[in-house]
Amino acid sequence: MPSKKLDDRVHKRLVLQVQKYREAQKEATRKIDDSSKSSDSSDHGYSDHEEDQDRSHESVSSKKNQNDNGSVDICDKVTTEDIKNLILASYRSLSKQITNLSDQIEDATSRLTSLESLIKNVGTLPEKPEETILNEEVRKTRGSLTKNKNNDDVKNVVIINDSESESGSSSSSKSDSNSSSESDSKSKKKEKNSIKVFDTSIRLKFPLQTEYDFCIFNAKIAKYGYRNRVINNLSHMVNKNSSLSRNVEKMIRHYLTKNVTMRYNTKVSTIKKKAFIDTLFYQCIEEVIKKIFGESKSISDERIHVSITAALKFGRKK
Image 1 (cartoon, one colour):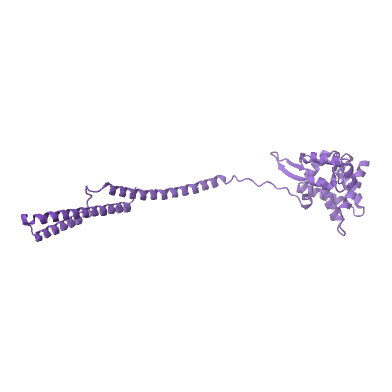
Image 2 (image 1 turned 180 degrees about the vertical axis):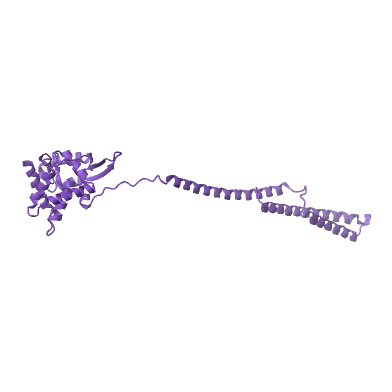
């Protein structure tokens, strides 16, 4: 509904329009009266003094009626155009107020909706996935590791072979790559698409008897705590008075049997044999050797590879 100010404004406009209309009607009436009185003044005996008195009396009476009523009464002579203009003015004012109220309601509704969505989302935020803890040496490995956790709290590791590492390792040995180039390409295609999941909750017995156990062993090494245990055990096996090859051989023979070592080459991956340097166990051996034997002088990777090759061949003869 319109406010009191709007009612007063509309009333004032109507009063002004009525006053203008009345003045125009009075002016037309006066002209008609003047012309008729001038022609009939001699017959009726009216004087100019009496006419002036009548006009002054009419003006005084109209003013008195205005003062008594406080406002001009709406007469029957108000045109439909006046009423139409008043209605349009009222409609525009009301429409503007309604539009402002609609905007305010819409703004408040959007804010309320956003607050409700925030309240619903509180407590349902996704938990941050557990990150796999690996140091720099393990992150450099050519196989990428993904860690998952099932409902029984059994941790599994998905080992995905890296095609780039295989191409880099195959180019390191010219003699082996020339003889098995075709077999390498086939094995790369197979290994690229192969994804194996290993149950790391299995308890292992050393030395490992099968290649599958060795894969589980590498999956366990992906976990930070288990990896530190393996490195500590390897560090206790080292004898600085012995040669590098003897120490590497001792480490490998403690954890792996002949049945496992015969399935690995040092650097080259083929259809029948995999590259030992691609395993996480090799990363542990490399870290221990460089830490203990590289205190005075750094040891190259090639020297470690030679010792690994000798240890793998020695294990096959046993």
